[in-house]
Length: 280
Ligand code: ADP
Ligand code: MG
Image 1 (tube, protein in one colour):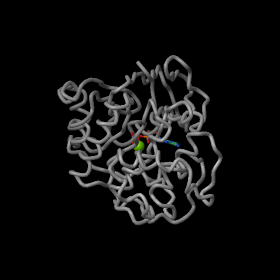
Image 2 (cartoon, helix red, strand yellow):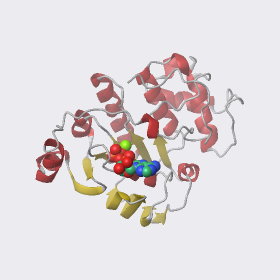
Image 3 (cartoon, helix red, strand yellow):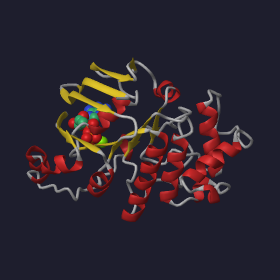
Image 4 (cartoon, helix red, strand yellow):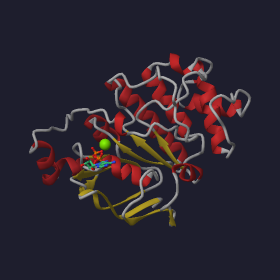
């Protein structure tokens, strides 16, 4: 067991957004977190990545408490996050974005206007090769297709050799075949590197096609967890999805407005208008 989450609670006013949630995540595992809108997925995700502090509960990585650590401190410990929205510097080239992530992983201070042109360029190119983006290395990020931006975000998240990778709706806004290609790629990286992945996802074909295990939340609580087959057969889960008129086909709702606008590694707010944003 790599990441262990015990009895997390988080309320906003009187609203118990996360209510006694416990789960664990193992090395080499792809764990999906699903549930209807408002179930508490994003709040759980943000508790794990350090953006929110729980009211009570414990989160440990290899037995070491992560409570109270900021996202950039977690990143240094090997907890990486990819964002739903394109968190890249559009004016930089593709490889420079990865070089920025490498600078950050190495504890260097950086700013978007200090170009990282020479920093660990070969390592950055190797990371791009892993996500099949090396041929686009010298293009500006703003020229990338949406699916390529998502792969770039993955390469950047890998820059600190993470042990835990947190992906918030990694395939949002992608076409079905692109979605599966990204998850196949994620699976390969998980297998090769022994990374543990926790991801939230609206697209049920992605969840049931790629996850090793699935956590299901409703109204702040974890109502089921198990293999995709176990969860699909669970009566409570079916009631939550089918009983509410929703199906496992799922409707996609963009959560971009909920997400922080800060760059995952630098903590800098990306103030320039993004031309690589979510087309949905
Ligand atoms: P999900 O991601 O599953 O759609 P969220 O974790 O975003 O659900 O939200 C869970 C509940 O907490 C919802 O009722 C939501 O309105 C509430 N909530 C989430 N974030 C905040 C916040 N920053 N302030 C107040 N209420 C919030
Ligand atoms: Mg959400």
